[in-house]
Image 1 (tube, rainbow, N blue to C red):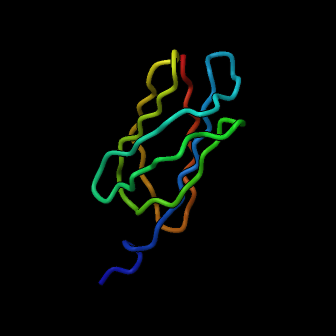
Image 2 (cartoon, helix red, strand yellow):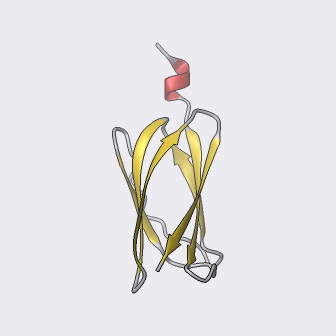
Length: 88
């Protein structure tokens, strides 16, 4: 049993528009094996943070009238992966 494979990491996503302003209420989803269902949206500062099992995932971020951001990410156990998603 590989305990490290069971240890989650954290994903911290900051969503901004093309001018660098935070985007509140942006929705996101993760695609990949063991991906959690993320029903949350970014807060008023454009930030969202949550635990994710380790592994590769495809991150999608969407906001009304600003399109979709897509990125391949890798979550490492006990580490925080930070992503800045620029929409628009």
